[in-house]
Length: 364
Image 1 (cartoon, rainbow, N blue to C red):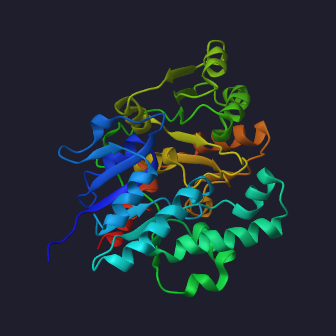
Image 2: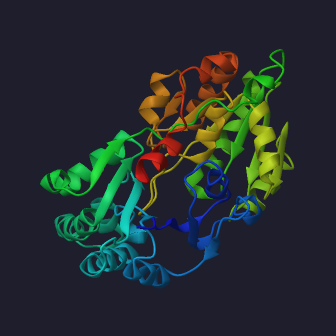
Image 3: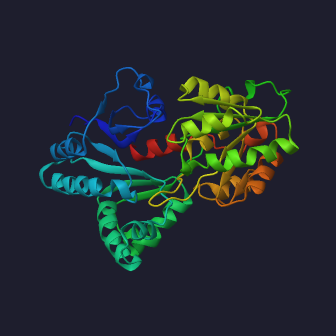
């Protein structure tokens, strides 16, 4: 019997998703909307990349077009309505196809979903927890395989679903969402003075850019040779650009290309991402953290990231999201002054990229 193709469906597509396709198992790539940094030219030649609706994806599932289809994890609140429909389609498909489409997912959501939903809907937490246990549980049991990218994510599912986690399907495994060392990481001049601080990400409240700006004068007071580079775009663009015009030793690049971002990351000594808590959102891992680690950069992050414990264990600086500006400044200064050789950061990384290993397991 001819093997059916595989596919992936993401609600929000980023350039990094396309770049990963070069190493992932070959398959079609569908997405609902492009994110702020989406560059379709980064997709591998010959790969089907298509913007579409979840209704179209549901039809493909009903037809049994694919052997396996990766979808957004059930615990993601914004994706839950779509996932319910896709899960229903998958269950119906099983009744009519000898080889129905199997749904798989990569799970890294570490927010307290019942608490977040209760805060936004003003329903009692007990009510939201009961509703989510039913809906998330239904979607979860419709999956064939689940890779947890952080221990926090696995704990969250266990806390919500309880005994439902032990039912089969799905098969599950934990593969930390950590990068491998990038081949060019050690090409940077080892004699370069440790002074470059980098922020990469959306210029909005969630990513802690305001906290970084507030602390910068204190960083310079102790480390006058420090330089700050801010790369990104978002609702706070005007504020950030205006601030940088008077802030010493600071540059801003709005909407940089991937090449510009990567070159900045290769030369950065400290990457800062003080992620903040927001309703219905919590930093899962943080792409700038992952990419910074891959080139041997010291990380200053908040406890909001799903790999906070791993970062702290391996010599990086982790702060409360509500840390005072002096605490953030001290963390940045400390990271600059004790900056390890890049090999010291890279040696803690896995031999196989965590997301690649997860993809191999999902589609094996």
